[in-house]
Every structure is written in C-alpha cells, then in structure tokens.
Image (cartoon, rainbow, N blue to C red; front, top):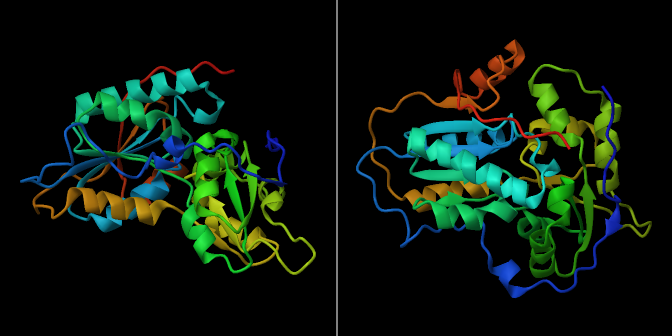
Length: 313
C-alpha cells in the first residue's frame, strides 16, 4: 500500500487570529430544528448516523449504547469517500442530496452527521432544508484543553478540518493557555477504512501520519492530549495506543454526541423496532471482513441507497 503524507505542513503551532463571534457561536452539536426542538414521540425514535465512509461507526456505537430502544440506520456514503477531496460547493451539494434521499426513504426523527469536515460546512444548509434535528461532530478541543496537564495538545484531523475557520475558532475560544499543534493527515482515514475491510496497514504507515502530533519542546512540556478530530481515527485506537511514542489521552467526541442525541430526544417510548441497518451508496459487494466487522457492531443487516460516485479530482 502506498503512503500518502500529510498534505498540509504538519507540526506547526497555531496562532489564531480574526476568529469571528459568528464562527464561535455556531454550536454544531446543538440540533436546532425549524420552529423549535423535537416534539415528544409516542413511538420508539428512528435515528440515522451519516458519514462519508466507515468512520461514523465510532459514533454509531455510542448512540446505540445510549439508546438501546431506538431504530437505527447507519449510512455510509462510500461512493463519495473521502469528503475531504471535495470543494466546498461540491460537498454541500453532495451531503444535502444524500440527506434528502435518506429522509425520503427512511423518515428519521434525528440525523447525526458523523463527519467533522461536513459538519463545519454543511449543517446550516441541512437545518434550513429539513424540519428535523441534526447533530454535528466537532473536534473535542474544549475537553482536551481541560484534560491537559502539560498545556500542550494536538489536533489530529483531515486537512479539510485543519483548514476550517471553525476549528481555529474553537481553539481560540476553548484552548486559551494551551500550545496547540494542528496536524492534517490525508491518509489516516483511508487506513482506517482499509483495516475494517480486511486490508493490512503497516505500523510504519500509521506512525508516519501520527508522529507530528507528538511534540516535546525540550523543557519537560510535551503533548499529553491528542484530539481525534476525524471519526475514522478512533477505529485505529488500538494501533494509535501501541504506536504512540509516549502515553497520551486521545480525545474522541463520540460520547458527547450520543449524550446530545439523548438530550434532544428526551424520554423515549419503548416498543418493537427493526434491527439496525447499514446502508451504502456505492452498491459494491461488501468484503467478508467488512461484513464481519459490521456484524460485531450490531449491523448484520445491510442495504443500498444508491448515489452516483463523485468524480475523482
């Protein structure tokens, strides 16, 4: 397998300037809907978790654990993976069109957009277009800053998330007093996909992507918290722990997303629900290793919600 090195300069320390109040105030976890919050349901809720590929399974697992009585759908837009290569206009059009199909065919009560890159860009369009709550995914910078003893943290993300003004605004607002290193990896999400599909990924390949997130300034201050700012990255958590040059805490937003979903839904009605399903947009046969991995995550049933592939750029 060929290695793709970070497409942004890695290991550069961020000095954040000109972060607008509007950027900081856009709470992507909020879940607003047209006309207010979600009305109480008299049946078990139907929730969907959406991502460009398999990374959202980390969020799906937390939502499923928090809401065992809900009907759950996981939608992997594998025909569009990875979203980070798309222009902003293409990404907005892709995700809005995808969710339009999802809403028409499955009628979810709430949708989790389990992608940092898409959340920071597309959520305002989704919330304007559909009268259901959308919960987004944001880098766990605030809890990481609170957790850090050394006051040195790193944000390991895709290049798209690294480049977003929203990410810089979160750092400016919530990581005051911390030295923050932004690391953009264009390969790590693909490695997570490969592993889940049964393709071997070398330690060297993963280490190349994560090492810039580990900073030792020579004065005794070194990185002690790494924010996993792509939902794919926790799929590699065991590998990350093993390859880290020293022990760190890895900050994952998935538990907070699940708590927000529970908060939005309120008390839920019990009842019979269908088993969780995983839908894919490419329509390709799923490898046996992936089917087994999905089954281990409670997604033995799969299906197709066909969508045209995005042109490769």
